[in-house]
Length: 117
Image (cartoon, rainbow, N blue to C red; front, side, top):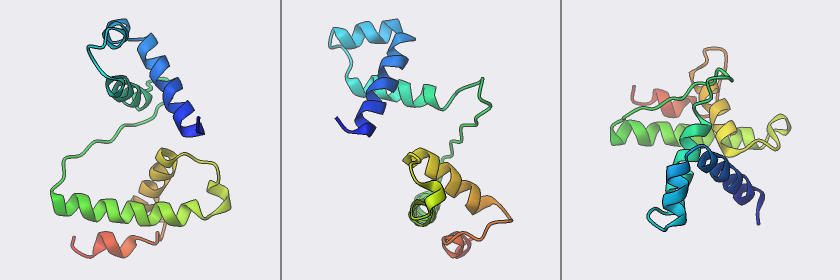
Protein backbone atom coordinates (compact mmCIF):
# COMPACT_ATOMS: atom_id res chain seq x y z
CA UNK A 1 0.00 0.00 0.00
CA UNK A 2 1.38 3.41 -0.94
CA UNK A 3 1.80 6.18 1.63
CA UNK A 4 -1.00 8.14 -0.02
CA UNK A 5 -3.36 5.14 0.04
CA UNK A 6 -2.51 4.53 3.70
CA UNK A 7 -3.22 8.19 4.57
CA UNK A 8 -6.52 8.03 2.69
CA UNK A 9 -7.55 4.84 4.49
CA UNK A 10 -6.62 6.37 7.86
CA UNK A 11 -8.60 9.56 7.17
CA UNK A 12 -11.59 7.52 5.97
CA UNK A 13 -11.50 5.34 9.11
CA UNK A 14 -11.27 8.41 11.35
CA UNK A 15 -14.17 10.11 9.57
CA UNK A 16 -16.31 6.97 9.71
CA UNK A 17 -15.61 6.64 13.43
CA UNK A 18 -17.29 10.03 13.83
CA UNK A 19 -20.17 9.18 11.48
CA UNK A 20 -21.66 5.89 12.71
CA UNK A 21 -24.69 5.98 10.39
CA UNK A 22 -22.46 6.41 7.35
CA UNK A 23 -20.19 3.66 8.65
CA UNK A 24 -23.20 1.33 9.00
CA UNK A 25 -24.43 2.22 5.49
CA UNK A 26 -20.97 1.49 4.11
CA UNK A 27 -20.88 -1.83 5.93
CA UNK A 28 -24.26 -2.76 4.46
CA UNK A 29 -23.18 -1.75 0.96
CA UNK A 30 -25.72 1.09 0.74
CA UNK A 31 -22.98 3.63 -0.02
CA UNK A 32 -19.52 3.27 -1.50
CA UNK A 33 -16.10 4.02 -0.06
CA UNK A 34 -16.07 7.26 -2.04
CA UNK A 35 -18.75 8.59 0.32
CA UNK A 36 -16.46 7.95 3.26
CA UNK A 37 -13.63 9.63 1.38
CA UNK A 38 -15.80 12.68 0.66
CA UNK A 39 -16.69 13.01 4.35
CA UNK A 40 -13.03 12.52 5.32
CA UNK A 41 -11.93 15.20 2.86
CA UNK A 42 -14.53 17.66 4.12
CA UNK A 43 -13.78 16.88 7.76
CA UNK A 44 -10.06 17.22 7.16
CA UNK A 45 -10.56 20.75 5.90
CA UNK A 46 -12.89 21.89 8.67
CA UNK A 47 -10.73 21.74 11.80
CA UNK A 48 -11.96 24.46 14.16
CA UNK A 49 -9.18 23.75 16.64
CA UNK A 50 -6.41 24.45 14.14
CA UNK A 51 -7.69 27.76 12.81
CA UNK A 52 -7.40 26.45 9.26
CA UNK A 53 -9.59 27.96 6.54
CA UNK A 54 -11.54 26.20 3.84
CA UNK A 55 -11.93 28.00 0.52
CA UNK A 56 -14.60 27.15 -2.00
CA UNK A 57 -15.45 29.07 -5.13
CA UNK A 58 -17.77 28.64 -8.08
CA UNK A 59 -15.91 29.87 -11.12
CA UNK A 60 -16.59 30.12 -14.80
CA UNK A 61 -14.83 27.55 -16.93
CA UNK A 62 -12.35 30.18 -18.11
CA UNK A 63 -11.61 31.40 -14.59
CA UNK A 64 -11.29 27.88 -13.21
CA UNK A 65 -8.97 26.78 -16.00
CA UNK A 66 -6.78 29.87 -15.62
CA UNK A 67 -6.50 29.44 -11.85
CA UNK A 68 -5.90 25.68 -12.14
CA UNK A 69 -3.07 26.26 -14.67
CA UNK A 70 -1.50 28.87 -12.40
CA UNK A 71 -1.74 26.59 -9.35
CA UNK A 72 -0.34 23.62 -11.26
CA UNK A 73 2.57 25.72 -12.52
CA UNK A 74 3.35 27.05 -9.07
CA UNK A 75 3.02 23.60 -7.45
CA UNK A 76 5.52 22.21 -9.97
CA UNK A 77 7.99 24.97 -9.07
CA UNK A 78 7.55 24.49 -5.32
CA UNK A 79 7.81 20.70 -5.54
CA UNK A 80 11.37 21.08 -6.89
CA UNK A 81 12.51 23.16 -3.92
CA UNK A 82 14.13 21.32 -1.00
CA UNK A 83 12.23 23.28 1.68
CA UNK A 84 8.97 21.82 0.36
CA UNK A 85 10.18 18.21 0.14
CA UNK A 86 7.83 15.74 1.78
CA UNK A 87 4.72 17.93 1.66
CA UNK A 88 1.44 16.41 0.49
CA UNK A 89 -0.18 17.76 -2.66
CA UNK A 90 -2.82 19.66 -0.67
CA UNK A 91 -0.10 21.32 1.40
CA UNK A 92 1.80 22.32 -1.75
CA UNK A 93 -1.44 23.66 -3.22
CA UNK A 94 -2.03 25.84 -0.14
CA UNK A 95 1.47 27.26 -0.36
CA UNK A 96 1.12 27.81 -4.11
CA UNK A 97 -2.16 29.67 -3.62
CA UNK A 98 -0.60 31.81 -0.90
CA UNK A 99 2.27 32.72 -3.24
CA UNK A 100 -0.16 33.54 -6.05
CA UNK A 101 -2.18 35.97 -3.96
CA UNK A 102 0.61 37.38 -1.80
CA UNK A 103 1.89 40.80 -2.91
CA UNK A 104 5.36 39.88 -1.57
CA UNK A 105 5.80 36.81 -3.76
CA UNK A 106 6.65 36.62 -7.44
CA UNK A 107 5.38 33.16 -8.36
CA UNK A 108 6.25 31.45 -11.62
CA UNK A 109 2.59 31.51 -12.66
CA UNK A 110 2.10 35.25 -12.10
CA UNK A 111 1.58 35.94 -15.81
CA UNK A 112 -1.01 33.17 -16.14
CA UNK A 113 -3.29 34.89 -13.64
CA UNK A 114 -2.68 38.42 -14.88
CA UNK A 115 -3.15 37.62 -18.57
CA UNK A 116 -6.93 38.08 -18.69
CA UNK A 117 -7.96 39.82 -15.50
